[in-house]
Length: 552
Image 1 (cartoon, helix red, strand yellow):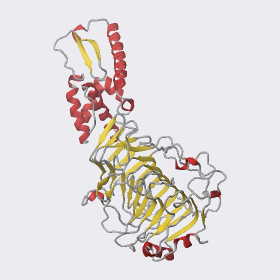
Image 2 (cartoon, rainbow, N blue to C red; image 1 turned 135 degrees about the vertical axis):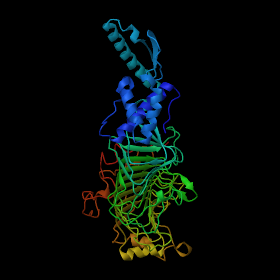
Image 3 (cartoon, rainbow, N blue to C red; image 1 turned 180 degrees about the vertical axis):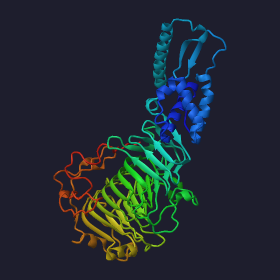
Image 4 (tube, rainbow, N blue to C red; image 1 turned 60 degrees about the vertical axis):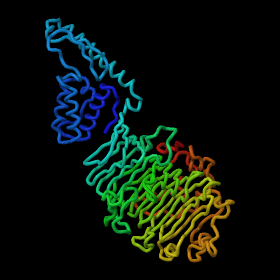
């Protein structure tokens, strides 16, 4: 469905624009491209395209064709030719201009006059197009706005010259492929979300200078976390629970199913993409996040993605083997990165920045609450992480909580400024992962954590013991972990700025040294021989250009 103006002229131009877009998306080899200007100005060409539409196999194109056939009766939009000859006044709805036209009975006029009328008509058309465009807001002038609701079938393309409005939960159904062009803007109305179902695919490949942006449909200045739902990608990689159903999709709806046996499968591509002001509570304890990944396999590409001001988690990963690279999560209202159900992917270059008045953990990792020993066991492998909190006086921020049997391997981290504690390992099942080799930490720099900036870990004696007497302080201060507590990574004062952050340590930062070697392999950047997500002293870095930090 498409919002149209009340003017009949604007409605007709909007219908023609829709028809062009839908034809272009069809990839019809017999009709390579619909020329919009010609469609507006050439009655014969317009009639031919409308006739094609009426006989199209595409239901939406056919419906548009039938609407335009009625509007285009007798070859002139919204006009009936007079029965006799003589002069008539024709209002062209495309251009809001009135032209004087000679009828066939006056065909004895000199040919030169016919050419004069033709040139006057063309000039009128051009002036009319300018007038029509001046009537519309600038983003509608160049782009138009198209509302999307319900199901997406077949091959779909969302182009950068249109603002796409999500209305309700939009499902890319099984077999569907949704391509989103660089620079495209997608706005979510309240209660909306985009769900890429298990047998569908998303290709959202933005560019550094033209990122794809998912954001709120509310006016700038009044946007807030939870204005819309977010993006969900579901796949067929292993998870550790049978018949998994994603949060946010009604129970029993098969479109929310995820998980399978194909660890190398792909949910698609999300690259150079921002997701803003997302994440609403569907019902009690059932929320959507900025980006939700359920059972996505290792061939999925999630790279250069920012999630900003999500109402629940920034990114939540439910099982699978999906890898994340060059990720920025800012201002999440719950956990910035959350995982469970057996996620075993890789992560390199990830920045978390918590805001002072919201949030809980930078990382929260679970295996499976119902069965902490369920396999596969959650154990992501991460290198080059920067976790930042502004030492909030309002919220108890913790850098990391691992519980209910989660494992994981965490290397080359900077942890700075958390008001609570550094890392909390909860439950004997989680502690057991250390002995099993499924949980490890190496090369950490921890600065200004705790109520006075020097506490680092909470006391867990007696009633506060939640891990079978495991001494976290002793473990993390051991030579095996190689953690530096109280060492200043020399982040700039802007590192915790909510509106214009700079995540690079200074060129003199001790984070230049002491990094663990990066694994070999296609995914890993072995040149990242430093602690943190951004190379110390960087004037320009991978977060520049495509990220934004709007407050509302």
